[in-house]
Image (tube, rainbow, N blue to C red; front, side, top):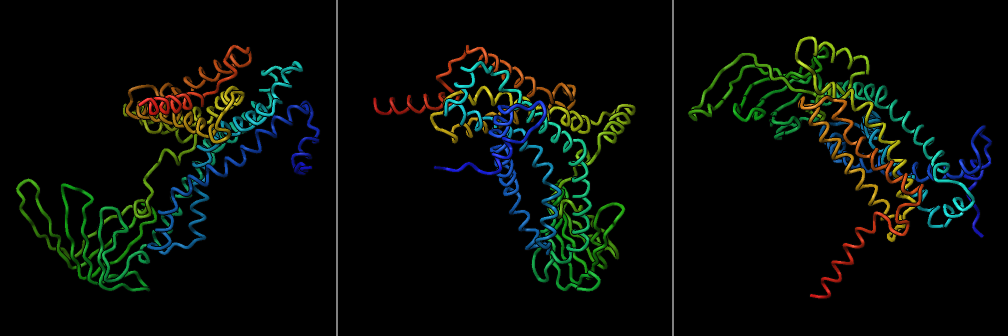
Length: 407
């Protein structure tokens, strides 16, 4: 006889005022897969950054502890994306399990409506929505700002470590740097050659006898100061070349670019800072569409958690011939559809084609209509309870098999 885990038993017996046994049971069935899905989805997103993070360890001399700190700073942005999808997956898995074991049929036969069963799910979704909103309004801007400061500190201390003697180094985007000798004490360079291809229309080759790495703490930038050298360039208009000698030449480098992070200023702003920036830009007659899009996304993206929870209830009642793998595929497809609509709205907002709040609300409006329509039909038993969304895929597969056999 299989023993039930201790933690779910404690959770079931925990007395919460106004929270009935059925509420605790449904909430537990949703929360357990939700927690697992948050971990798996976040790990999948972090895995996509592993190659760049390992490159920082190998080529920039960054320690594993510092890499873990960077991961901690980028985690809020990842979690803000994984929360809605994890809620959808959790509800699909939880209601799918209860539906396949006929528990949903038994509950509804006892007079418990789908509206009543949706209460604990929406309460869980509301808590996740509040957490996601906290990430969007407070935690993510704080983390992005600290990430930028951390990257600058690393660029100060690790730039020389990332450069290797007598090797063509491509640590900076668009630059190839060759250094004949380096000093371990004062970051001075000897025998420097740089190929600068950041501007395709103005590519230069710089050769200098000496150089130095100068960090600028106020401007959050790095300057490669070169002494006693020449600049060899080409004019693309007439294919002519030119040579310019110099005693001192400063080459600016963005530290975020050197470690693979672009400038995302609106992401670093708090709610009040965004409002101030937007108002100032509007007063000058030059709207900051990026800031307006970021502000609108703070309201619209977390709200998807509630819509995915409601949609997951209806889809979880449907049978799935492929089991959990089919439900996972359905949730991925829905999230991809939402993400595509969000990108469309983001593009319209950033180009000023549509009001930012209206544009960023496009996916929420579409999914709100889908969620309410599916839920109403399921609660009223007006839908085909014998078929699920995955049956469309199975029908296509079976049709393909029949056509292949007929051929």
